[in-house]
Structure formats: C-alpha cells, structure tokens
Length: 102
Image 1 (cartoon, rainbow, N blue to C red):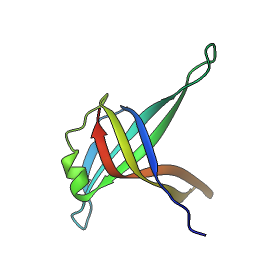
Image 2: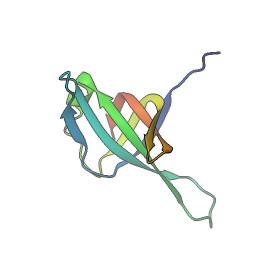
Image 3: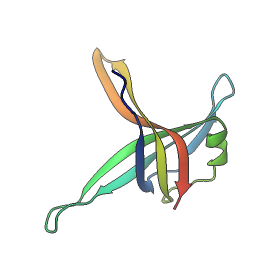
Image 4: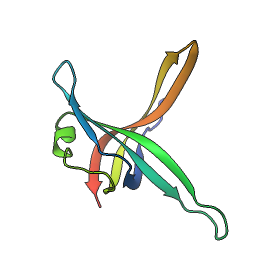
C-alpha cells in the first residue's frame, strides 16, 4: 500500500549551506535545520536537527540562504543507508520541493 510522504518543517539553518554541482552538472544545495520542539512548561526544551537536500533549479534559486536564516521547507522524507566498518548506518533527509525564507 502506497502512503503519502510529505513533510513541512520550520527552523533555523545551522551552518552555511553548500552548493555544489554533481558529475552530471546538476546543482545540489545541502544544509541542516535546527527545530525546537514545543514542550510543557517546566520541561527542558528538545531540539532536533534535520538534513535538507535541494536539487536543480530550486537549489540555484536558494543558493543565497545563509546560516541563521529561518526557513520553512516542504518535501519528501528519504532514508539514506550506507555501510561503514561493517556497520549499517542511516539518516533521514528531506528532499525539498519548496523553500520559504521567513
């Protein structure tokens, strides 16, 4: 059964975004967003960090984003898997389809 795979998050960019060209000359912009979770009064604030990938024309259009910019990102959630020292590692990435600077 196919399910909908869409996320919308808001947060602050933690480091300077990196724009690069792949071997096939496609633009790729990567950055990480810090998300602060709403918690009950008296409970320590929780923070999550989410990796973002932006491809093609959208990457080029957003290449002026900077560290500490507040953004809203919409896109698909993807799990990257790789092997390192006989151990399988993973991370969750959002492949952006829309970005709004707030």
